[in-house]
Structures are given as structure tokens and as C-alpha cells.
Image 1 (cartoon, rainbow, N blue to C red):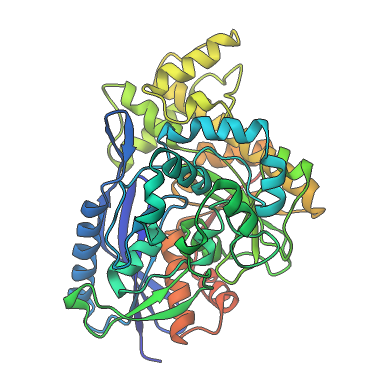
Image 2 (cartoon, rainbow, N blue to C red):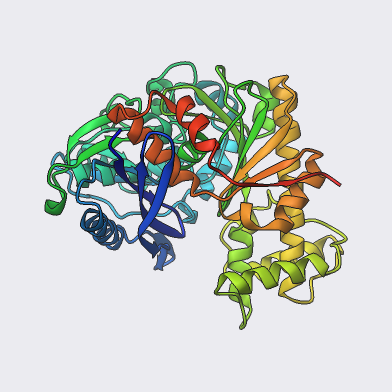
Length: 470
């Protein structure tokens, strides 16, 4: 068959990339067209994304892609969840681009935790995360009641970039499912949840399954003739789709990056008080199936700790030296409580960690290697707790953990996860979200039968490192 070229726009909370996948019918070759930094910025005590700058980087990346691949067939967008853009009928933003680490939702989350979360969880299957879209929109409407008459649509970040590329306003299901506003027993918005938070139903279109074609690219003249494809908008949904999972459902999925997200694929949600207590988030794949997962603070902890040191790694060899030094550092006598909200977005992560340890009478690390050892051990333990909770709640026995993302290249973290969980960890070096994004485009274009066929073919070309529990 003729090689098909697809461009994945993969937007993360700390970086973004445009990657072209070239599929020849049996294997996938990846070419990085553009990579760029991303971060939220503080203004007057609140946190905001620089969406115009991100759009400029996306345009530049896609223009580079078409320059190197003149027969580019399609483009798809995935991104982080919960954040959104409120727009007027023509798509013009009408409210600032708040970032999910903004503390404006803290009071609402505390109220929901005291009263209401049992009902909301039974409606949506999403626990009380302080960054949920439900709480963000509730705060917006409470602080600015007139916004109900100004905004016409609410588009999640990948939805908004799809609009800029194709001119189509569509709410994709996988990213919508993290909002705490989708009916856990259906594939549509929960009227009861929208009413609970006081959010207008008219702000959303019926959630659309993915993958499917949106139409021609209209927002970037250089991409004339390229097709815009609706892929699973949530980057975690794409990352899970890329993993070469066993067909018998015996694998756990771990996407390790800014957040640690460990989950399974399921035909049914995991609900009830025990699931709520374990903070199981019943998110969806693009086709509507469930992805029950448990999230905890991830390598964000290490990223922010680095800011407290004058000398820190900036290259791959320097990172390897840091992890090697951390492996030789003294094992921590106590691990971090990853549920501590003081670690969510502190002014100084190093000080926040020290404060937590001192409250418990534990020793504070002496150097950066010591912090890296503490963080990796704590994350490994958090991954194990999540794995054991999913085993109990699903009634399934899992044979291994498939790990992708930046953390999959951290051998100390991989080994800590295997040791704590008592399960082999298969680490794959792949751009998980970007590959899942490209796979969805190939299915929409008819170049691949379905995602299972892609996993089977792509899995044969992947290298892996296996970490056995000690």
C-alpha cells in the first residue's frame, strides 16, 4: 500500500509536539516536526494558559510537517483534560484561559467533599478532583453570572484546537468524560450533574465518538487538502490506545508523566463507595468504552523540586547521571503522602515536601539525588496502591503493568513500581499519546481496520525493557 502520513498535535501541560507518523501497512515511522515548551503563567494570583502562543506553535509545527511531507493526509489533536475555552457563536473566546492548577476551585471542592460527592459520583463516576471542569465552570458562573448569557459554547482544549484547524465545534467524548458532567451510564451529558453545578446545557454539543473525519483543514492555508480528524481528545486515552496490550485484558496501563495515571479497559464502570474511596475515575475511550483509572501526582513533583536547586539536569546524559546517583542514595525512611493538597501547586515544592516530612518526624533529603530517590519510591508505592485497588474493584487478576510516558525512561521509577506492586513492569519507549493519536487517524482514513489491529502490528516493532519485582 502507499505510505500514509498523519500529523499528531499532542499538547501536554509542560510541552507540546507535532509528530508525523508514516504508516506503510506493517509498521509506523515517527518524525518529530516540532517540539515546544508549555506552561501556565501567574497573573494577580491566578494561573492562565497562553493559548495564542500555543496556537502559534501548533501552526508552525504543522507548516513544518507539510513542508517535509507534501502528501500529508490528516491531522488530529489530543491534549490534557478539564481545561476549556468559553466562546461566542463564532468561536471568539469570551473568558480568560484558566489553568487547572488555579486555586479558584478550592472552596467549591471542599464544599462538594463535605456534601454532594456521593450523588455526583453516582451520576458521573468521576471523583472530587479540585480541578474538574464542573468546579471550574461553577466558579466562573458564581463569580461572573452574566457569563451564562455571553458564552455560547464550552470547548475543551483539544476541541478548541480542532475548531481553529477545521472550523467545526465538536465536543469529543473521551476528553468530555473527565469533566464530571457526562452520565456514567450513558454517552451523553448528565442533566442532573449540569443542574447540580448550575451549568447551561446549551454550552455543549452531544458528545461525539472518535475517531471520525471532521472535514478539510480550513484554519491553516498551507494545509489545503489535508483532512482534520477527530481523535480521542484526552491525551491519556490516546496513550492507552497506543499500548500493545494483551487481548485477554490482563494488563494494567500506566501513563507516567506530569501525572501518574494507572488504569484498565472495561465494558462497565467501577462504581460504589469503595470505588469513590479509591478515587476511581471512570473516563471513556473514544468509542465510549470505559477506562477506569486512578491518578496521583506524578513527575510534576520532581520537575518542581528541580527549581529549588541551582544545578539541575538539562540533557539526557545529565538526567541519567541524576537517576544513577538517586539509585545509590539512602533509601527514604518514610514516603510522601501523594494525596497531600499541599503538593498540588506550592510556591516551592522542595519546601512543601520538607514540611510534610518534618510534620511526621521523617528525615529531609540532603541533596537532589535524595529527593529524586524519595519521589521515585513514593510514586512507585502510589502506583502499587492504585494497581491493588483496581484488582479488588474489578475482580480481575493482572499479570503485568505496561508503562509509557517520560517516567518509562526512568529505571529507578520503573523498578520501584515493580517492587511495590509485585508485578513485572514492561517499559516502552514510545510517544504514547502521539502514537495513539496517529492510530486513530489511520482508522478514520481506512488505512487500518481498528485499534486492535494497529496494536498488534505496532507492538511487533516496539522494543521494551522488563523490570521484574525484587
